[in-house]
Every structure is written in C-alpha cells, then in structure tokens.
Length: 65
Image (tube, rainbow, N blue to C red; front, side, top):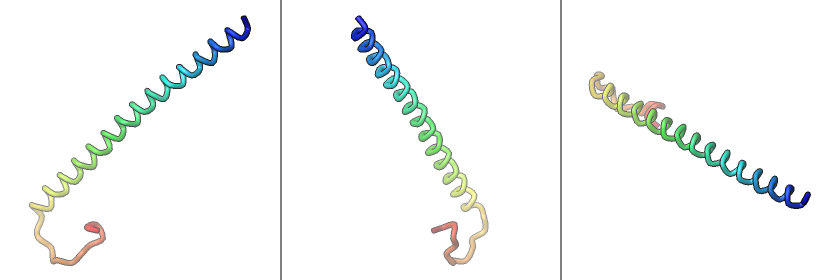
C-alpha cells in the first residue's frame, strides 16, 4: 500500500511540474510576442519620424549600425 501511495505521489508531482512548465512557457511566449510587437512599433515610428525630419549628411552614425 505504501508503494502505491508513493507511485501516486510521483505521478502527481510529475503532472504538476508539466502543468507549471506549460503555463510558464505560455507566459514567456506572450512576453516574447509583446517584445517583438514593441520593437516593430518602435522601428515603424522611428522610420516615420525620419521621413519628416530634415535630411542629414550621409555620415554613418552609431544608431544606424
């Protein structure tokens, strides 16, 4: 009987760990999507601002690298 309880506890711990890992990966996936979205919006806004800003000389700046 004690062996059965131990096996049930091991299975319960494994299933709990899998569920927790599943939710952690989903959480990290959404953080990654938000970060990619913010980066894209930043690039688009920077591009639009550069269209309306006065043209600079063709020197390479550290931001462009």
